[in-house]
Image (cartoon, rainbow over all chains, first blue to last red; front, top):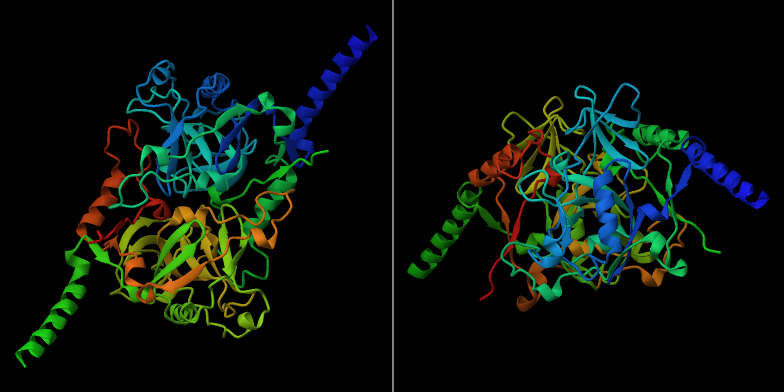
Length: 285
Length: 285
């Protein structure tokens, strides 16, 4: 009985600590239930999911990952400076069985809504900023916010209608295709192994070259939720806390460019997609 | 005598055709004297040099390439979402022997100066646009123009003073670090093999990981001017002509997004660094 009480108390304490971490710690640990391990032939990629912003997409993606849906799928549409897109063979039973999702392209904000603002009058948004590590756009005039298509985000592909995404996804591999913001559902971002994402074989690198054969397409060896991975294969990461004063100070420093290297100051603006949110490996014991 | 006249005539015609190509052809061939073939372990990379914008840097770089300066050099500073930087061992005799260059960060324009405008009120420039395939910034209020740090450009590294670049260079591998515009000398851009540039081994992918050993750094197997490469190893490319009406129409179409996929129209703006200028392989006989 005493043991049980202690356990409950411990749970409360853990919960309290997690709630406080937004204010108190410069780094936050990834939740292994909301983290994906994608294994490619060239190496491992870790993706943080964003159920707080795109709950239905994360729920369906997580179920698909757990069912083995993506294991052995291929990146069949890979365009340099744009995206690596993958999924099951088009029109296969495996493909058709997946229900279509309602788009989660943006959401409504109110007066109490907050984020770590980075820039006003960005080319595609009235404001940009970070929330819980994710790059966001925000139009106060519309009371709308959305996840941005910065390099390394994962989003669901779809056909022409907005509510037609199912399981095919893409990861952005070059300059941010921001024109896709709000009309696609972004649901996570790569926090480790972006070099492996960028080296996924292009399916046609250049006009006038033959498209590569299906055999040459990069496969997903496996896709797993991190908490399902065997303990010795798990990768534990911490991510910079974008709500912490230290991060906010870093943004100010980056904008000011006080280092002597900047003999002439650049314009005091920040492209949010070129503003890093760092990851670090948690040391293994 | 008649034969000689014909040759001269032919020369004139060729010259005329080259002069006219800015208006008349949708594609232009790369000049092999102003093109670099960089061979990496993972594949071949082709770089178009920009002597029309950065003449002193291109001249010195070309001499260094021809002297074998870069063969066997390594990419010793490779940061994800930023740059792959390479050159000779710091402070080595080979390194110290290279003269320092005056920065060619921007240049003056006059009323007759023209380019293919892409966007007004870009975050970092009053205007952006293309000239001869290269992405440029332009501030009419200052009468200044400059080459942009879009993904895949090559620029000279330097120390804190502006006129300290010599032979160490970097290629941008992620979102454009536009804050470096005008304070560094961009002198070319990758027109083929960007996937190989992006897969150059990072020297420290993530905080908390050990830096990689020097042996694991990606080497430049060779760096050659294309006209010096044996004929059967040459790569011949054509690049979209950014002065041609067809390209200008493509920009307008891209801005309008009339395809049914855009069920909701994105803002009618273009990020120049996400606006492709295509390359195509010239068919081999």
